[in-house]
Amino acid sequence: MEIGTRYAGAGRLVLSPVGDLDMAGTPAFDRALDGVLDRPGLLEVVVDLGGVAFLDSTGVAALLRGAAEAVGRGAKLRVADPQPLVARVLRITAVDVLLGWPGGRDDDGVVEPGWRRLR
Image (cartoon, rainbow, N blue to C red; front, side, top):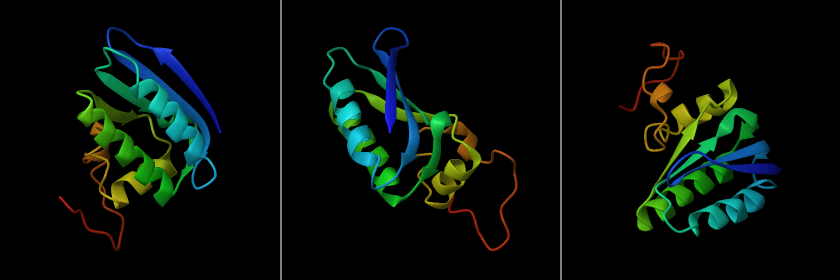
């Protein structure tokens, strides 16, 4: 997994992982996120999921750990631009709203057959 980091304004950083955020990719993501969270004056971390093709439970757990750690340091973590499969995982696990993804609420107003909204 490759992870880019860029400055996006006062106290705001963007992490851009590329690859699968799964059991194999999560350790690299955790290291990159820890490095970002150690920066002084950090207010927000945006995890750009546009380059993540697959997200499993270990990836979801890493995002939630990162969000909790950010809050503990006085910042926030949110996700942005997930690909369709990743967006579906975020919706099904009901962490879309917890991770600040506004598209996760009722992005298309459609609930897949067999699924019900948890909100």
